[in-house]
Image (cartoon, rainbow, N blue to C red; front, top):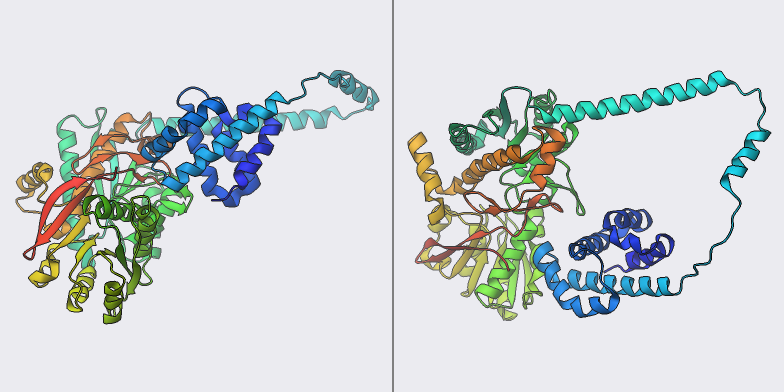
Length: 526
């Protein structure tokens, strides 16, 4: 961790005093101006201060010394900090509190007389020539007044624009690939979204207004998708948008959502760039209902160590794949905190699969399990290669569908799969029954998670519209960001303002035996 923010914070306290520690937002802005490259540490420090200030005020150094362990635990449980980040933040704050007290104890409080400001001004005025051009002064003041009035008018228009819906309904734009190779999946998700809207409207809608789903077939190329979505959002007649498109399209249209100040809920993507403009900064108007890849890595580390009691895994990641790399980063960050250690890391390629040499390396290191950090459809090829070259131990993966059961019975045996949702989950039977009653068809098991998320995205949209002080733009964006303990069909949703994605959301566990994957339970890391 970089200690420069702590050193600079001491300098700033010397200038602004102890009260600066009681204003984390201001402290964060000043630190970013002085050492912007250490944003990660600035974030940990300022959010830790906010958590401590929930008690009312900062404690004395000697009292804080006895609170260190409990504060470290709070940061991990309430903010999701890793152990190392929590310990660093607590250590840094303890040092700043000691420094602050020493500075105040040794401060020189003598009052000195200074040349008065008013005599100085009068002296300057006395020296000004009496022939000043009053017309220029009046013109300058008039232009300044006009500028101030224009600013207040623009702010008033933005507030009133977001406070009222443009019609007697809430228009929600539904972005999907409704033609081409992904058309079938897109239409199923659209049906689920319409089912949710119909159920909400049957109970009176939201604040007396009905929800209207406006579906649009998004082109498969990024350039065409951006142009199309920009044209749809430019009139600002939609409260928000839901996207079930592929990742690359979601990243592209997230820029448009920011530019048009329209909240965008992405239902399936787990890639970080969908909601993050940089590793430290979320996009203003983009939100996700599915968890991100870093969290997927954490969930795998938690289940492996706390559920299976396996503490020496081998990692298998896909070469040149961003999602796989993000999952690996999340796994690495948490495995040590849960008491484990990575035995080895192997990569595979879609063209060649995992080779015999990689499997032999896994066996030589004595790994007690293999964690596969990549998505369908290629995960089955990794399982097949592991078993074919003689690995017989436990396998943990983060993607599963029924197509994988075409592997040999022995191939899937003793494998565990951590996935967003599973159709055999008892709490999801009501959703499936409602879908079946309305459309007289069952949801494909391979499309189940995506269809469920589209349904819950509309439910989340309705909750945000109900709680928001307005129906568009800034008002609705803040309501999405402040979502906490919202009970949806598949999980209870709390949004992390640092990532605009779910915080500590529950996930489903599937165990394979006899060639079949069976739902076990839902769980989340503790």
